[in-house]
Image (cartoon, rainbow, N blue to C red):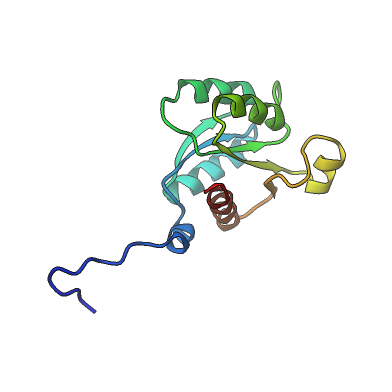
Length: 145
């Protein structure tokens, strides 16, 4: 139905935004090139601005060079030089409002049992589909609001 003169179009709700992604900035730290490329492409298509890094050390450099906000750190748990947990701890000091979503090929029980992550953190197990990635990212971002 067309809008009458002077009527405003309805504004998207958070449910509508969750279907199509978002506009936030995400720092993607993933050492597996194929996984990083797919995640990057998926998140950009969903409307996110994505900063990418291959290692935790590189992610720290990228974050420090970025002048704007970073709303979410999407990081692999196990990476060379600096793992995701240490990366998240370091960035939390500089960006305390940033949300974190950990990903790993290991199950969440395995990473918790081995002390890599604390119970209750946001976690996504590899492999994942693009739609599951976008849904989980949106869920973690919405939880922070």
